[in-house]
Image (cartoon, rainbow, N blue to C red; front, side, top):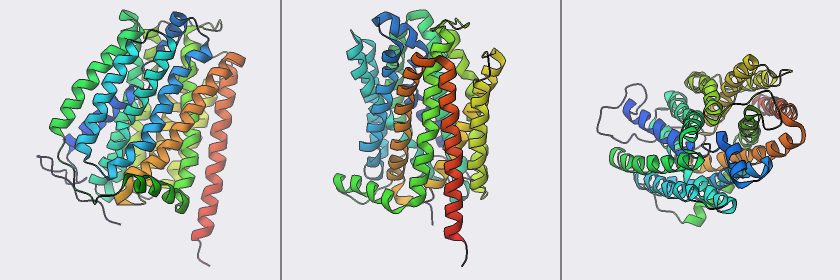
Length: 411
């Protein structure tokens, strides 16, 4: 398999990656800012609940709407990355995201906020146009590392969105969070259009045929189906935990914590270790240790859940659990992407669509389950569900690995 030819970007390309460090950094920032709009409301769910006089499970549906919209964007828009000029497609979607965020901030009631959040999610799929783009520009020997750096930017966007959101909400309320996000997306859409190099030309293809080819890839590629299943469970746990932790830290069910929105956002910094881990696990994949990386990721995730579920929820265990948990989740995500991007150099956007639709279907399921689980049994029940999903992921991967070994074993 050969890599796609690199696109000149006006600077000398990196000798080790086939893509300049400047462009890798820009892709990482673009991913982080684009995906951050999915998570900026998580630290302020309690404020939204109070403002609209709704239950915790109803307030959590704001996150669900954004994640469902994201899945729709992945399904309907991301495949266009294999067809259209990504230099135009990505900035256009970012400009649409700015408009959707503005509408969310102006929402007069919960129903309007729900619909606007759905649109925010659709346009936030820009991040998954950029990730396969970076993969196509990298040399095969360094693809895992480059994707790891870009994914680090994506994870930092997810985590820092919570920190910055909490700080802004502390000053101006939850609507101010959305207005600031809209302004940032508008500015970045212009920057990306001006600085990113022209995309390479691709053969024309009908949109319907493009979408149909995603289904054919799922039907014919067993490894893609396996990684889709693992991705669903990964994001189920991640979404469930980060949706419910806002209720835990705000003391919504009488817990001993009673933090402000700003302090709730600061807890997301504990997950920055996951972003640091991404390039490391990418290097493991590049060196042929993808199986070990996948197994290790699930073991780390389970350890993170056990710390989060520590009896009495001591603060030290909670913080350490967040560090370990996000480390494991990011490692799992990167090992999955390293595997699927080895399948077809000319169809990486469609491979991304197949994987990420399932991945964020897990996010929707996780956010919905977390709201009802927290209403029914609080943080303890939520952690039990999370531990179960992580153990299921490890067992499923063990089964996949054994099956794959049998198929490749010489007879």
